[in-house]
Image 1 (cartoon, rainbow, N blue to C red):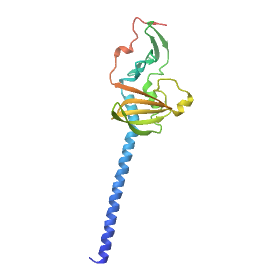
Image 2 (cartoon, rainbow, N blue to C red):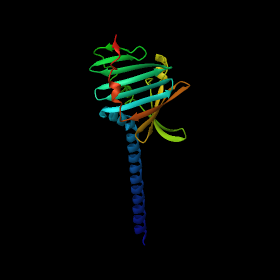
Image 3 (cartoon, one colour):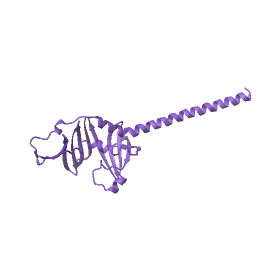
Image 4 (cartoon, one colour):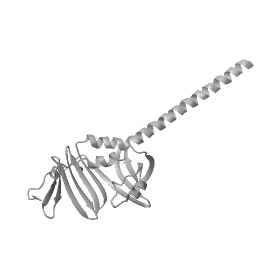
Length: 215
């Protein structure tokens, strides 16, 4: 092989190597971007699922003394909020909100008020499009992917100030596309709640008991 042919062969090999490296780099960047898109969209996809599901129950559980149980039935909602052992019950339907008091068997009507009709969806909508940080963490010996957002205290059982709000971080932990836990980080304090989601409801939740009197 003469000198000219050797030079051409070397150039061809270099070009081939550069082409292979370029293709590999392209697919690595593409895969990375695809993964980022998938990760970014997890909470958004979950939000869309809630919006498109007519009937579901969503429980936020810290412990026996602190929890929220929410049920959606098309254009009706029912939820119980327990904070430090004290429980409040609300029924939203027909454009009104009803506060139910089991101990006294009475209810109060707040007319033209549907503020809590889409309670869970509204809470997530406040944060889903904000800048996000990704990570992984073990909870109860199982690894979960999480998405972390700043500035939301809606899932925190406790009191916060406007100063706290700026420093609060919220992590949403997913098993596949299923939301399993939410952690609120408030300075050195961390609060982890369990999420229980089902696409089923108790139809009796959306009826005011007959023996309750309106106040």
